[in-house]
Length: 553
Image (cartoon, one colour):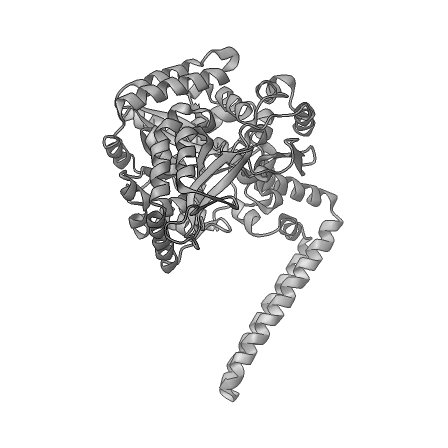
């Protein structure tokens, strides 16, 4: 248990105390030696190793110039009035210069900026780039928008807290669920009402809403809205935003890889299968299940994103050894499509990091738990495809404490770990129990333990075989006493409007719907409520700690 809440910035909590953290990520954070061979890259949080890795990055001059022109075009389109912010323009010029490397991160293009963790990722990339530049390594931060993803249900809504601190789901009108990439989806007129609802929930004024309203407008694509918002938010720090669906220069680089991956599908699938077995044998989970038939490629045809896979039942010399969706397809037809339409091909999660490495001089990629886990699988592809993986750098993770939450936690002597592990209503109810009842229950437990200890000693002398039965009885009675205490606390809480309101407030802000704040609540919901949020994160977020950070607003 960490120390009870105290005032001050940047309190740290070991992430292994966060409920549900996967073991592979925990070892990557705190015991890298156990997993180092899975990643074949320098350890994270080590600026010296990262600086040395930057010197090993190879990036063709012609590709650098083509990508610099692409990034300038994309980011100018998203800049207010088409005028690049000074810091962004400077980073684009720096990107074009020989020797510059990139710190990459990315996220799905969620409605209203997506959840807070996207904001933390982007800021971690900015801060890590600044750390490297301070050591003389020319570095720029790049945010890769996952516009090729097709899981609409994950990104078509935003959660914000209303005036009563209840999480409210704001549902976007982006059409029915489909199998096409989400980036090109256009916002309907309903987005205006959605932003007005967010303003009512947060109490934000017109000035605070300006960036969101300028970005999320009817008729704008989801990708362009997200990019515009991040370009505005991160203008002071020059974050470069990238959309792979609007990148013909990048598609031209990827086309030969798509062909190679398709031609070598059985071999690469075997590699991935062996790595999955290695992970399982080591007691880790396999983040992305990869079948023997999967090619790691999707073709965008007829408005859908269709998986391309090998027919395992096809005979040698079969005219149609592939399946596109459920339709048989010839190898030549697939190869011709890739050659003619490389911008209509997208990779699976396992292939995407390698493609990222091709079009950017990547020294590090800032990732969350799921990404870090599947990068242990992806790492086996790099040697076969003739490259080296960059450093996987875990993203900064944080809980933001608004002033009222700070006061309530100080008043009740709470810490985040208690809130993560126990329903806050019951926690506050017990803390608020009248002293007399609390003392009586405590005295009952003490007396019970003392008397049972005496009984156990006597039974050992009388009949040692009875000791185990005595222990089981003790556990049952302890359980009954805890249940009694909880029922008393709940009863008291129902009669205490103040305790209930405080519990709802803390639950909504710090562990909404029993989920980490950064994983659920909208970035825009916090940014419009606290206009100084981005500068504060830039000043206080630490990209070089594995711990979860607690930051006061």
